[in-house]
Amino acid sequence: MASILCMASVSPQKLSSAISRQVHTRAFLVPPSFSFPRRRLTITAAESDANEVKSQLREKAPARTGSSSDPLFGNKGATQETDKWKIRLQLTKPVSWPILVWGVVCGAAASGQFNWNLEDVAKSFVCMVMSGPFLTGYTQTLNDWYDREIDAIIEPYRPIPSGAIYENEVITQIWVLLTGGLALAGILDVWAGHNSPIVFCLAVSGSLLSSIYSAPPLKLKLNGWIGNFALGARYISLPWWTSQALFGTLTLNAVIITLLYSISGLGIAIIEDIKRIERDTAVGLQSLPVALGTETAKWICVSATDIAQLSVAGYLLWISKPYYALALLALIIPQIYFQFQYFLKDPVKYDVDYQTSAVPFFALGLLVTAFATSH
Image (cartoon, rainbow, N blue to C red):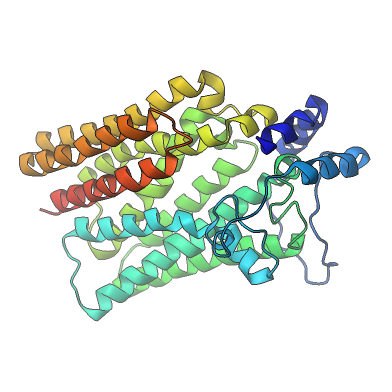
């Protein structure tokens, strides 16, 4: 409720001004010169009304009463952090890493050539570090950077608009994470003895997708349909492809199946968009809940998740994997039950209950599918 009051107190003209400037913000980051002064990034709607808007929002910002570990994992409602290195970790949103790590596990399983020896375990660990902390951390930090002016109006207590971290430090973090992730990709190619740098190319492709998702002029996140599919591909398809290519050969079946799974990215994104509907409405972001309403969006969410998995099950039947298809169908049934039990009743109130109940079955379905493609 406090966040709604905050947004109501900000005039449409201020919001429009911030969004207009955000769309025209620089699309390419320039590595900072270390001779530059260390400036804090305290950004507001406009200099003329900055103090007024920021004062109003700070008075009405939601209480930050979460556990001390919450900000480190990117959870909302967390205590505002002051330690610089903890802030850096917060910007990378570790809560978003597990799905990438699981994608690496599934890709290794799909390759059919992963062995439980020290070398393969070490390769998979490096691939997980590349996919999670480095390239997903790059994605999340970049996204916060390009959302900084909107956040300055709606959530001024976040690390960048609050001035808790310097501008040069944010830009440096973006470049360090990107170059570190790409360097690890190159090392994995050499380690695997690849004739062509396929892991590096996939890492570059994922990084470019992350950039056009967050940065103008394309800024895919402004388009609910395309942006959410891109999100699904970034979080499900690319880590799977990378890991499968690392340990074996990336096959057409794996590409088709993971792209089908990427449709579920629509559902994953809508869960978050429903919780941010007031914020997105205020700043003009056309998420699906904003454009179509919460009731329609929640049905699209569960439909996208179910259709993606049913499509994969159908494809497994088509390529003569009936037992794997039946196993996947068995894992879809409890997800549908929890959709009706929790999410469709109240997607905001039962968000955590739904995700903790349904997501494990979705993850197991990914692994079952990976084993299907390996045989």
